[in-house]
Image 1 (cartoon, rainbow, N blue to C red):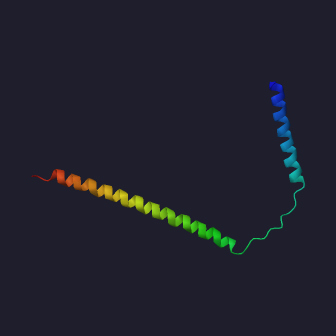
Image 2 (cartoon, rainbow, N blue to C red):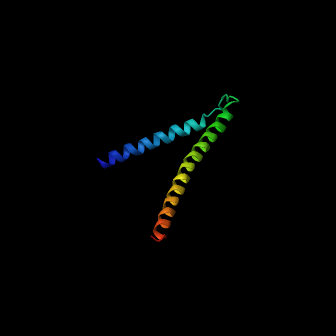
Length: 82
């Protein structure tokens, strides 16, 4: 039973390898058209990701400084004599 399963797996691997070998042997050059505005799309996506990262970092930096200022206020309140 195990040999049959191994044989089927080996057969599938062989068929896939044969299929890819035939695809590589019969490859033809692609006749594709790229719109001139497609390059600008890459710039737009990159800029949007950059702006999103800056927005998230801005929030994190604000949270950090708020936490730091609260900590400083506690220290000054504790050190002042009553």
